Each structure stands twice: as C-alpha cells, then as structure tokens.
Image (cartoon, rainbow, N blue to C red):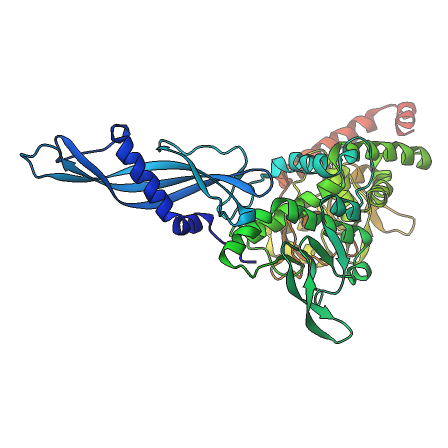
Length: 522
C-alpha cells in the first residue's frame, strides 16, 4: 500500500462544500462572535464568506472503525460598511475549528459536523493519529499498548506465564490463518487481507504467479518460513499480522479511499530502513515489529518465568553467577514462550537483565563467552566485542586507539580490546592469552567500547534491537567505530588510573609479612 496518503488532503477535497456551508451558516447566525480585524469599515454591515482553506486536521481514534477529527480552516471574510454614507468594505481572515465524526467502515458516508467554533488553539486528542491514520505510539508506550491488546484478546496471559498460541489469537480476532506460497523469492513473509480480492500468489507447481481468491480477514504465511526460519519467527509473523489488523485498519481504509483496489498490507523481509525519513508504512512496520514480541512475552509474566528459571538453573549448575546461567535461561524462555532466541534475549534486557547483552555472541565464526558489566555501561548500539578485521581496521584509522595498542596498554583477546594487566588477562594451559573470570564479570573496567551501526545495503530490515542480534545465524553486517566508552572518562585516563591503582595494590601486598601474603592469596 502507498505510504504517504493524507487524510487532511482527502477531507479538504471531499468535504469542502460541507465546511463552506457550516461556516457560512455560523457567520450568518453569530457575527458578533467573530474576531475581525477591520481597517476601513466603521459600522459592520453585511458579513459574508468569500473562500476558505483547510489548514490542518487532528484525528482521534475511536472504537471499531469510527474516528472524530477537528478540521481547522482559515476563512476569508468580506465585511461591508453598514453606514450608507460610506462605500467601504474590508477583507479579513478568521480561523475556525470544526469537530467532525465519521465511520471508515462506510467510507465516511455518514460524515457529520458535530460543532463549530472560533479556533483558539489545537485541541489535544486523547488517542491521536497521524495524517495517514496511523496511531501515534511512542517507544515508552509500547508496554502499555501491548498490555491493552492482550487484555482485549488474550487476558489469561496477564495472569500467569503461558505462551500465546498465534492461531488461537487470530481466531479470537475473527481472523483465519492460511499457509500458502506468497512469492517465489520469499521476499514477502506474511500478509493480512482487509478486503475480499483476487490475490496474486506464487504457485510452486506451475512455477508462476497466479490469481487466487482470498477472503477478507485472512492472514497468509509462506510455508517455506517453517524451513528457513525457526518456529518462533513464524509465530511472531502471525502475531505481527494480528497487530496490523488491530492497529492499522484505519490507515488501510484511508488507502482504500484513494485506491479502492487495495486489499492487503504486505510485510516484506527485504529492503532498507529510511532513517528519519520514514513514511506511514515504515511506522506501521515499526509498530508491528515492536509490539509482537511484547505481546508474545508480556513483561510481568516474563519476569516471573525468568526469575523461576534463573533459580532453577543456578541450583542445577551449582552457581550463583547470573552469567553462568544466562544462556540456558534465554533458551528455556524462548522454548516456553515459543519465540526466537534473539527475541527472548532482547526481552531479558527489557526485564532489566543487562547480562543478556553479553550472551550468544559469535565473532569470526567463534563463540564469545558470556560476559557482564556495570549496569548502564553500554547503550544498545554499543559493544565490547568486535571481529579481528574490524579490530585491525579501527587500530589503523583511529589514532587514539592506535596509541593505546602501540604502548601495550590494551591487547586484542577473545574479540575484545582488554587492559593489559594480570588482573584481566592470563595464560591457559596451552599458553594462550585469555580473559580472567574477573575480567568477564567486570568488562566495563577493562575493555574498550565500540559503537555499532547497521551496514548500508544490509540484506534484511531491522529495527533498533537488531544491534543485539549477533548470534551464529545472524545475517546482519555492522559498521564499527571506536566509541571510547559510555559515561566514562577517556580510556587513556582510565588505563592510567587503573594502572596506578593496581601498582599501589601490588606495593601494599609486597610489604605484607609472608604469612599475611599467603592468607591473602588463599
């Protein structure tokens, strides 16, 4: 569907005559209410409407397919002199606000103007929508919106930890899920149909696109998804399309007002994001992408299950360290809620377990052990772990990083640039340098921080959480830049401060009596 349809343009064109008549009647009945800036006329005679222009429209989302909207217009008014001794007249402008209602289910054929008043300021709508009729949802509102969605369609998930069954969810929403080929190249993973239509779908037997009747309220998922992606991703796709049905039917009906042959929202899995220049389709995809995992894993119940699993694995593995159990906990959560490993990992971070940021990372085809750091030490687009190629490039092009490596302050070990000190680096039985256990649990003390950005031309479309998707199946490529840390002093100063601190500790230790040294080491 088109991404930039304008509701303002539509109502300005279709209902111009209705607006004109309403304002003309208001002027005739309530001329004393007008705030006219007259220059020539001394005594107001005849007041008439000459023209008007729709300046803006503010839309409020109502239940079902109904909306209410305030139309702000600038009216050009002519005022004649009331005293017959003068032959003057003035032209002046007056802004009006018209409160209107209508039902998109009947293409606004029931349009009404409920009230009209002199415009003073833009009214704040309780459930605002964009000019493309996409609901405004801020990032900090996503949890609340997901909770509302579940309370209407799947309330039992808010009372006890259980998995959302996508087929049951769709059925409760009056939707039918069908598994059939969509495209030959799998460029479209799923789509939801808002109206009956003849859909062009891929026929694998004929090896061509064919027209197939599809009923409204149908979700189609490509069956090859089951083989190319895990079941968690397929479940996410169905929930994703359910979100489109719940949140974006009005945006789709606006498209129908412009193009009555439109029938579906197609969710493509290829293509790039447009940065800040997102159109309505981009925002709808962002909302569906962001809400689907929050619906599959409602936060309160996810925390309950995560706490239970952490306790279970700590007992089973005989450890008190969270990083020792973080990966089996993530996999267990993914299996329980029937989501992908990456989705469960991101949700763990949402739940406050930042240790998950260091889990399931693969660099240069090798597994990077889980690691922990001070809370708030990393933003979501930052990392301690980079590939050998990126490490070499950054050490060449970044003079500050180059100097830290040349003077021996930092070594590249296990995909990290680590402060070169025995507290953080040690030799294994084969003589290979590795991070100490202390270093793995205090990465913010000893490792350099790098900023991530999704590489231009990346084959798939991701939202901001993609920075956390660095497992062995990930196809994302990143551009990496030395970030010098987050909310810390410069790495150069940190290296000096830590070196001084360690030297002082060593001096104190060496001055202790031998017995105390042995006890201290023990």
